[in-house]
Length: 226
View 1 (cartoon, helix red, strand yellow):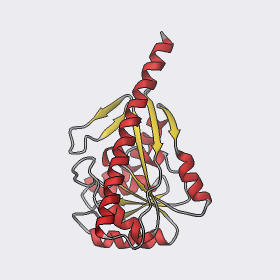
View 2 (cartoon, rainbow, N blue to C red):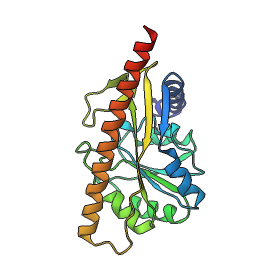
View 3 (tube, one colour):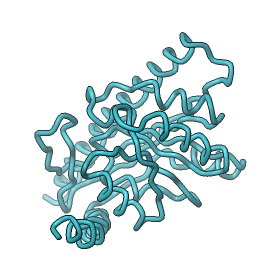
View 4 (tube, rainbow, N blue to C red):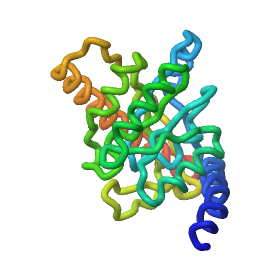
């Protein structure tokens, strides 16, 4: 009974919370034209973002169809049902459970013309350290990896392994996309490691820059109001 209530009541509440937080946050979008151009050229992408920045990501997607990798842990079904309310479908699996099956399914839907989304440091970390899975996915599908992050000036940071972030109302927010990272179909193991490190560095740089930018934006708003 409790599980039924959780999976019936919480998904609409979770989607409402995301939309409400988005409406109550002054959000800017930087670099979205990178993805828009790829879409105009008929290409799909693999979005990569850190696990602790995933809450607001449904608000950033403007494509025609995406699949997100959701782990098989006990809260995975809840996350999948919330994502579905934004038109984003889930593929279940992770590096620890069902990983090979999930990777095959992501490759299939990626090749069929869908965007993909993954958290390269999930589901258990280490935080801000990319695993090879996303790079292997890009190699198998031919899709570019586009790093994306979200920063907010007012937030609640939880004491979880990833330091999960939830925006608080009336702050500044920023979605920022980075340049695409391409992985060749004939990439060797050493090539894949180079791309993995490139993605990790790009996401960390992007995230640090976004966090710094929203703090400056918040300070400017306070100064203007005084």
